Length: 137
Image (cartoon, rainbow, N blue to C red; front, side, top):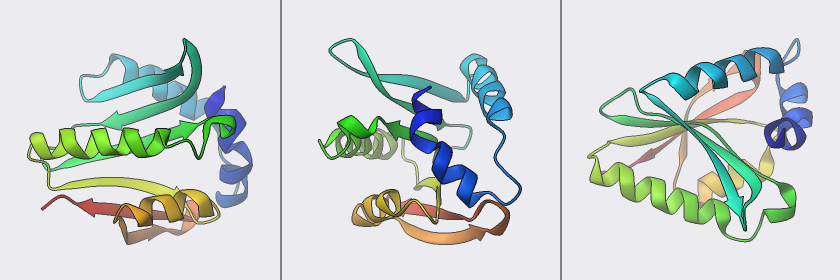
């Protein structure tokens, strides 16, 4: 529900033809049982405030499928701490990159990832999404 609440307006405007949440939730259900995916609920004082979904099926790349923080908890360094941890863990695992996709109309997220050093390496026109990469080497 946090993903839908925080991201619905953004993805509906970005995706040409509309985004299908049904397929998103089906993908999460499959990811929970996959050895290559991890889906986390981010909590503060036992209250869910966000989600993190990462895919680790490549020896060279950690793919962030989603990181969503409830807007009431944004700008409190939670996302920064999560990214700091993911960067550290990826370096320890000798990954070359961390990659993710951000809808072009999600200006806050684009600015956040750029501030961490992520660079755009491709663009998905159908989803109005920039594919971004952080080099770890």
